[in-house]
Image 1 (tube, rainbow, N blue to C red):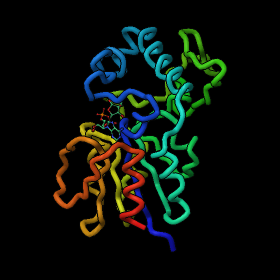
Image 2 (spheres, rainbow, N blue to C red):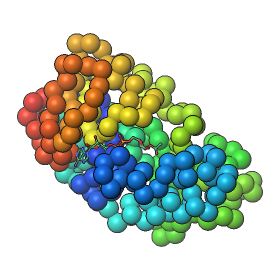
Image 3 (cartoon, helix red, strand yellow):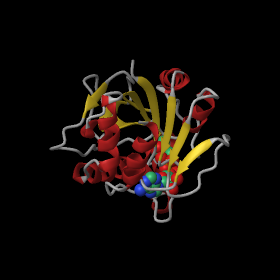
Image 4 (cartoon, rainbow, N blue to C red):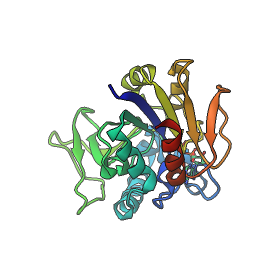
Length: 228
Ligand code: OAD
């Protein structure tokens, strides 16, 4: 039986793929205030701006490739039963070959009906932009399939159940500022080893964390040596 390795990833996981993080200096929230682009109120008040914000993110993603960290995690599936719980809306874990990826904050390459939340569509990479007037079959405007601030996180229950079964838990590239995602660490059982890969300090409520003070690519290499 392979051990269950659960990995919580954030924006730092994709930083080496050229995708900007949110809270580092020069991060996205410095250029675009959260309340103007990532809330239901923002979409109500200025839908063009919100759609354009995600159109830019999507075009940026289409130029990006997984980095050695994404590939390293995918390769670990040979020896571990791996579950990746990501706050990232990119699809770089999937592109690298990871087979169990849960997106807590939605997916950039999908759209969703504003009138029927179960109507979710893949976005064609050849025509990646969403515009006002793009509608679902029932005639409702399409929106990005993203969990905005103030919205429910539908995948949380599934993520918590997976974290409770973890035999090794790894956190990569998240400032652990955003709840409920950051609260998943509380669901990790006490005797389970916890690793953190991040070049900077990250404050958490656990004191027995093994901090690998490196970027995602080098950090995953080092993690392999520690858990194999
Ligand atoms: P943040 O921008 O808050 O944190 C990024 C973390 O990545 C920081 O701790 C950095 O030190 C670390 N980091 C930077 N470069 C790295 C590298 N090369 N390798 C490893 N780590 C690196 O991003 P998140 O914690 O992911 O939500 O943010 C969480 C959520 O807040 C996002 O999903 C997004 C945002 O608002 C929504 O939009 C709903």
